[in-house]
Length: 462
Ligand code: GDP
Image (tube, rainbow, N blue to C red; front, side, top):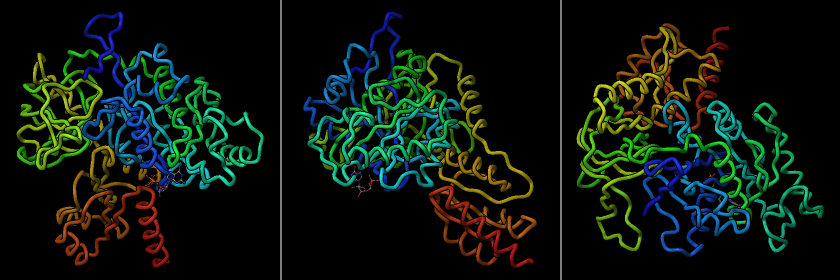
């Protein structure tokens, strides 16, 4: 299936699919929302309505238009559709980078209308601000607003000013509260949030991930945002060598270590030489196979994937190649094709260095599962004025404990592990050596735990 879209600029030029990420507090409905969007696309009924890639789902323009009805006229858009990253959460958002920026072009910030802004919502807004990512707020779970009656009209009527009955005013109150929690400085322009208005970086769209209310409006706003803000970045040379980001390093039967990657620029082909960011620096290798999930109906027992010849941005793909054991989630992938290999290696190296975390002589030891999450953790630690002695990607191993043990002060004899495992022998050693281990998969919780520990030490010293 081709996702190319020809423009006046010539045959090889194309607008790629905007990449969309979903963020928000736990249990506010990120996963349900993605399921609902996929479900709406499938029930649009067309064969191939959505394409399930590795780690992402593509919804083409005609399907979006089918869902959104009058709201999206395909003639008004020259984008091929939208590509949704399947793993919700700002952890994956900050992990997934492209050339120094966020991999996702736009984001959906999910906020439960009953619960309002919660710690992870604020954390997500901070990340979106830091990366200058335009986003739309999905004010979710409107079906739970007391008295809500889904029969009352099309979702677009949910526009806040439109109605004055009790349900609407209940809803309005909740939404106003959410808007109130977004400070003015979060946005570069005035806040317009009427559904059919694309005059700002921010819209608040009432939705229900449960019933599907508001999904057409949400897709409409996403298309509007993409069309308005993304166009220059969307122009790709479809024949150009691919650039992408590693989502995950996986073991695939028959292939050994493989990488799941999102390609955001150019094309990757079966016979390409590639450079991938690894623990010890750039890995140079040759593509052995490009794999995509088979349609569900075709899956045979051990044959979940099919080989494809090439993958054009923006898409997710599983890449099989030798020597990928050492590849890092969050690291760059580059196709070499027609370029001097040194140039590409230098490019990958520069990008890895760009993400490197600066460390000081005295401070805590930090481990995280990906480059992007390590960077996010380090910047939050910096804001909290907690110095870092050492920061690395990977599980907590005995040598990390030995490192932490060399810190001069008790409060720095600590390891902060974000989304990583602690190896058994490392845990034993830490106990022997009085090195404190902190583990969490939410950054602010991890830091909170550590700060409580520091307070305890300080109290004990008084
Ligand atoms: P996540 O942690 O943000 O991915 O949240 P989930 O998608 O797992 O949703 C958390 C819970 O809220 C689940 O029990 C969902 O069924 C429920 N939920 C999500 N969206 C809605 C909604 O729009 N309406 C209602 N009533 N429940 C919802």
